[in-house]
Amino acid sequence: MATELAAVRAVHKPWGVRDLHPWSSLDGSDDAIGELWFERAGKDARTPTLLLKLLFTSEPLSIQVHPDDTFARAMGMPNGKSEAWYILSAEPGARIGVGLTHRITPQQLSVSIRNGSITELVDWRPVAKNDVIYIPAGTIHAIGAGIVLAEIQQRSDATFRLFDFGRQRELHEDNGVAVAHPWPLRASCHPARLTPVRTALIASRHFVLERAELPEGSSWALLAEPETWILVLDGHAAIGLSAVSIGQTVFVGGDRTSIEVGAGGLTVLIAYPASRPVDSLLLALGEQSGTPMRSAAPAVPELADPPEAQGPARTQGPTRIQA
Image (cartoon, rainbow, N blue to C red; front, side, top):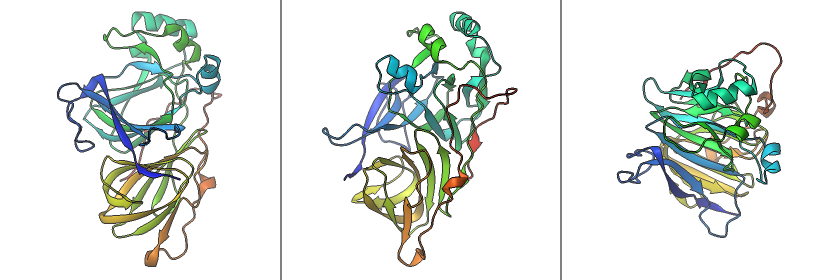
């Protein structure tokens, strides 16, 4: 079983940035970096189910949509792509596009892709630090400029681009229309406090995303699932044998791992494949532990990837978590 500091792969994008601080010391001055992918360190390591990455935007990303598992597998892909975003920082006026403002027909969606009016149909919403957004497969979406976010997703390259803000890259009208839900997004996040230190941000069919805030000087046992990703948002700690700080990620593969928190405490995102939070994921050790703290996992509703809810449309904005 592995506990390892994740390797980082820089992905250059036309909408990326030059300066990645404080999240990374990588230099994008010669070629803008749009994404940092966290990957298993070993060349022979088993391919994970999930992909964790950071995105840095200086321009809007394309308006796009991802297929669900059924459509993706019909095309010969292993799975579709649902994802979630955690906003790390956002400039004033920064916004995301999630779903459409109202329901339209597939034919109207095709026309809007061809003439560019899809930009007026997307439901653009302001975002701020600590917002959480769940994007089920089939949701038309976009990320605006001036945002740094963490993304957890099903590991898939299945993306159909619908509009690219003049960058002249290929669009995927037919497949995009076939998989898109051309109506407002109704799925919303309902974060739930599991313990004094754990908050379940998202519990979906494909993954759970949590935020943990551990006090300085505390010691913990992480009873990891076969695939668990830990991204440091703030603070310092030793996780297993790795000393970690802001922007670094640890992969834990089904193992019991120690967490020794440094001065100032530790704030992390934890993601793993599951449909509900694991009760015994994080246990306090030593004098501060008392009895192991158990979660209230049944209180976290699973976010489904429904084709459409019944009744009139009611859009909901990003969920904001108090830091």
